[in-house]
Image (cartoon, rainbow, N blue to C red; front, side, top):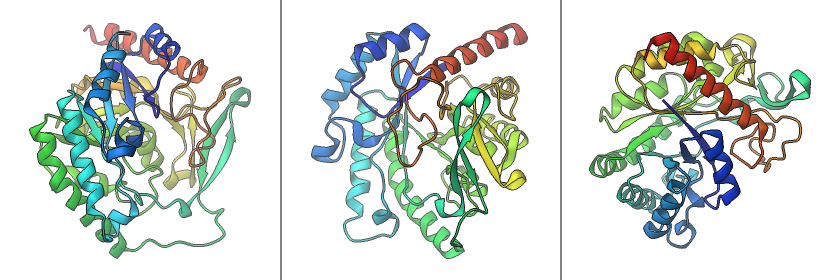
Length: 336
């Protein structure tokens, strides 16, 4: 297994790349489809610029692991006029990524969560570390998603994947889906909806960006271990977001993100399960609490957590070291 780091920015500085290389990061995951050069101008990435980016990252001993296709908006999900142009751009982007030899792509679908169902808050953890928390019960207005809305969104997801999957197969790209975050009841890619993806599209190029933290928010350690066993033995886990949380929506009616050693999950046990099913992809320390001295680029959707690398972010540095230690321990524990 290797370590990847998320960036929403393709204009990483030399200092960023040097520091990531020094820390032992193997790959970069790009989490924002609109960040690639060419997307704003033509709707999809420019191949020459993408190859330049890939060569630059490789010159520092790393590679690109996962990219993000242009987003499919609510306009697409509601099947409004002109929506098919968004899907055409995603298909073009998939071809470009395939031609560049990028192994994994993610498609985002707007509307796959219902933020009205929980209230975000700032969790203060050991030593004053700041972490994302979400709880049910603090909302002033009720929201009840319907089965009809779910099925309508599911059908639009199927419409998109029906065109994306053949392209992924032709260009040898693994099309990975991230679970709905947060996994509110009735979300498109939470609960059994997440499982439905590989039932509807049994291609070996269809699988998961498996987020340990997000799935733990829905069912704790037991659910995570069960799903890793289920998806992993089928070879459908393409990337792992390796993060820890406290609590879950069904048990405590709230959850809080936590440092890798400070949540409810035993992360070495998670690693052992991944090893058992033969997973050999990247571990990505996603959504890291904000530690003293860290200055982040604030995102209104995620104000209390770090969602991407920035220079001298000691929360990520800590996470990288923790994962590398777990991987070293795994070698001794397993004998290989």
